[in-house]
Image 1: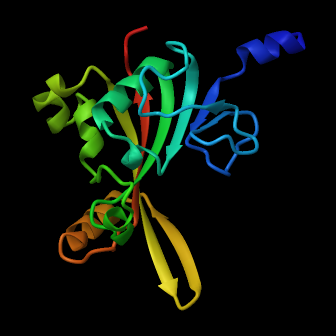
Image 2: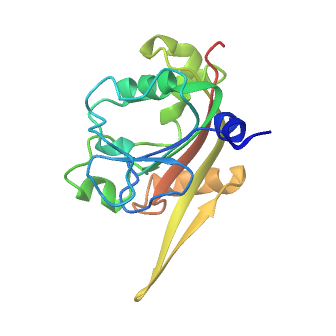
Length: 190
C-alpha cells in the first residue's frame, strides 16, 4: 500500500477546542490561533467549516459548556462525523464549584444530559423530538478532584455502582464530582 493510500485510509480525527493541548495526527481546532492549531473558528457560528461525514473520531474536552446551544452543537457533531464515528465529550458536572464560577459557562450537565440523544434510554425515547442527532452512549465516567494542600489529583470513576453512589452523594454535597465524560457512537444511517 502506498503512503498516499495509507494517508487516505487513515482515520480522520478532530480535536475541538484544543487550546494548548495539540494532539499529533489530529485536526486541532480552537477559536484562537494558537501554535499547532489547524482550524480557527468560533463553534457558536453554524455551520462549522467541516464537510458532512468527515471525521471518524472527535474529542471535545471542556468546550460544550461554553457554547450557546447544546442541541445545535450535538447536531453539528452528528453532521460532521461518519456513521459509527466515536466521540468523547467531557463537561463540568452540574454541581461542581467551577461550573457556576466560570462566567463563560452557558450550560451545566448531569449523567443524564446525553441520554436525550440515545433512543435506547428512557429520556431518548420520550424526548426523541428534541434533536435529530442520534448517538449511542458507550461509556460514562466521573472525574473526582482530590485536593490535599498543594497536591491535586483527578481520579476517573467508571464502575456503575460507584457512579450511582457518587451521584447520590452529589445531590447533597457540592463538588463531589468534578466532571462528567461520555463516549458516544454516531448511529445515523449510512
